[in-house]
Image (cartoon, rainbow, N blue to C red; front, top):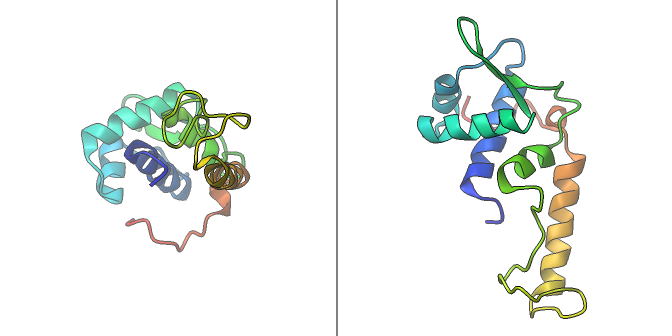
Length: 137
């Protein structure tokens, strides 16, 4: 689909953390709960912490948490932490010269999809997600 596997795992982990905001969660417990490879998820969680989406505490009682309340964290911040600040930019076909002035054959269709996706990710906070929706945990 449009998001990388790393972004999908990052979103699933952040949803898990939003649902378990009462205490820090260990990387391995998150991985088990959302059924993703543990070592891969650990790297993703570190990236999210490096970008300020999560906080990480070492030692007894440590783990990962959202850096802010679920009402303040938009899904786009998670995706941009993984995909990069230029997420959504560029040609869907990978052409270097694609622009509004010199569009590729899919430019207008992609622009519509891309803009809708970015708007949804930007307008959705973790607190907006249904607590009863499926995530595996």
